[in-house]
Each structure stands twice: as C-alpha cells, then as structure tokens.
Image 1: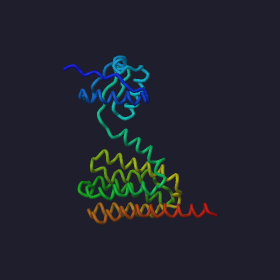
Image 2: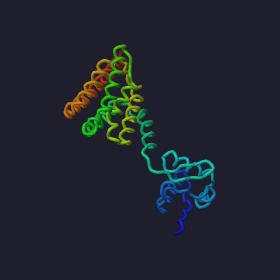
Image 3: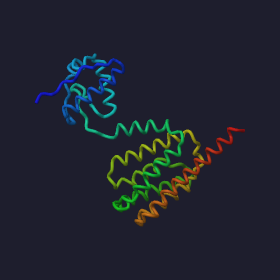
Image 4: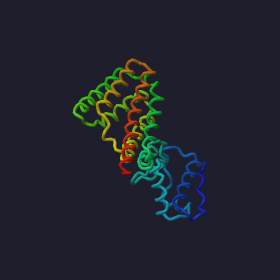
Length: 243
C-alpha cells in the first residue's frame, strides 16, 4: 500500500511548530514504526510546501523530543519512544521553576515512601551489601565533617534499582538534580552530615529486616528532617532580610 502524502501547510505563524505537527501526523497516519526511514528532506519539504531550512528546524525540535533521529549520511528515522528526553527537560525546568524547595522534597518523599514496599519484596543480599557500602562511605565523610552528595544520590538509586523500573530510576535522578538546583535558593550548609548518615543507616536496617512500616517511617523521617532544616533556613533568611 503506498504511503499517504502530507498536506501542505495552511498557516504561516509559528512555521516550525506547524512542520512538527505535520511530521507527527505523517508518522501516525502511516503507522510508521521505530526505525522507519523517512523520505528525503527535499521530498518532505516539497510535500509541506516549506523551505528545507524550515523543515530542518522542525526535525531538530522533534529530535530533541526523541521522536526522530538523524543519521549522518543515511537519513531521518522514526525513533522508539523514550521518557528520557521528557525527563531531561523536567530536570532542567524544575530547578529554575520550583523556588519553593519544599515542593521538590515533597515529590521525592511521596515517590520513595510510596514505592519502598516493592523494594522490600525484591531486593537481594547483594543490593543490600551495596547499600551498606554506600552508607559506610557516608559515615567516613560525615566523621570528617564532609558532604557526600554522590554517595547520597547513589544510595537512593540503589534503594530502588531492584525494581528494574528505568523510568523510576530516571525520576529519582531527576528530582535529585531538581533538589540541588532548587537548593540554590535556600542555604543548606547547616545540614548535619552525621544525622544524615544515621538516617540512611536506619533505612538500610529496616530494609534488611523487611520491615515495611519501619522502612516507610525511616524514609519519612529522613525527608522530614531535610524539610525542617530548609524551613529554619528560610525563616532565618526572612528575619535577616527585615533587619
């Protein structure tokens, strides 16, 4: 069955947006699968009634969204759907948009407390050993009064790795990045490294014991402590600003 052609554009404003919409419609109307090679740029531009530069602008936008993929010297292909471009954009946007850092914390808190139960059902001894190793490194840093952001991020990723949910793993990283971007608006220097280490150690204890109620309580307590520090810092900043 021959492929359906694209209809010429009828509206001039926001031409690159119209190009994107037409390309999407072309893919959907023809049921094109991931890996399908699209017609040459010259043919697509002619069907749309636009210049090749306008077409390329629309193609680049769809590449950034993970809809299309350009292969140098080969052509333009339909790309398999992935959450990755959307999550990357989410991480970028949240840091600047959520000046109320409590919103970022609440999202992470709800996500992790709500999903820890599945971890207790599936986590292995090897996963727990890796969590312990991360916690031990945290302790060594804490005893020297040092921060341990990388091990903290790794800990939360390891905590849910056993669920083999790539989107969840990416979301955890997204909200981690958003948290640190948003924290630029609030001074977090007085977070107690030893208290943070103890929180993580207690979470591992509960996970190893397969104690769901305690694991949820410990995770909730961990985020409650962070929220309290943030609230105190914001209060201090407001007081200082009125003097």
